[in-house]
Image 1 (cartoon, rainbow, N blue to C red):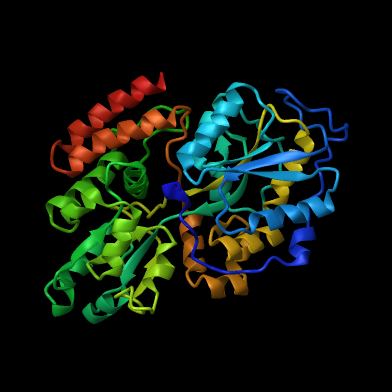
Image 2: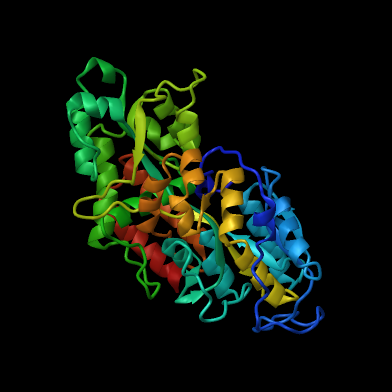
Length: 436
């Protein structure tokens, strides 16, 4: 599973008939027979059977959602093509099909970091101008956009949150931190107390893997910086990028971030917080249910809460998005049906059913004030605030090379091997070469 698609929260929910039958009608641009619309045509024409390729559904609910579409559209049946649970394997399977111009996949579930690659290779089609996304989270729509063109309909989203020990903050008489400076100041008030014995201030995902790219990008964005500008040119030596990396490095050198963080991925950092070893944690929403468990597995149940990730300096805390965007393959048949199906998956009834069943965050804005969703996921309104100000990892056609360059540059800086300026100058040079 991708680091960016950790669940909204472990939850249960039924799929009512109304949700199943509330289908979005087929796109009006497509009225030809099922044999039309194949190849790499740029038009969204052709109605008929389609296939939906997505990572393995561990909930068992996705087929029920497709059954709803199929009942309402018997001549445009959608067949589920479940791929591996591994996001790398999913991407590889999709690319293999694209490279031979196969029509085996009509609609593909893209991680936001794949959108730029798939779009630049013309493997997925830009959606018609004027496609209505007004009822969807703006940040999720942005994650499906490449050079101002929309290449997918958002299906679900995700963003990291700041988990904090509310009991320790209350005892110290300090509020919830909105900046890294406030976070460290709060820890300085707490660290000498008996309750903080054996603890450090902070945990994140800082091992040398994709989570490091997520955490570093969040720090840069939260300091008001970028790694690439809107024209796709690297900006790794910008003031904001320097401030973001400096904050992480200072966290280690000043003892706020413990050395074990250099080995932490999602689960290791979650366990550290859940075991009462850290006061603050940045991680995905799936952690909430595990940390709140009252079966004895969590030492912080009832003692924590969540907030948006903190800002750095004068910057506003900015989480990095995860999730799935549904793109239409350039080689698909029946593109009108494929586009209509993608829109159907973003309708409110489908979104609610999938959210309650899968624990994944919805893209329909209305659900963030839905009483049933809030009851199931108590942090829903906080997550909405985080998602409203969310950003993305670099939108580049060769993301795999870029993320490796980031990890190879940043990790030595965190472990004390290189200085901030030298690190970012080296990274800038590498990114400029990759951008050519």
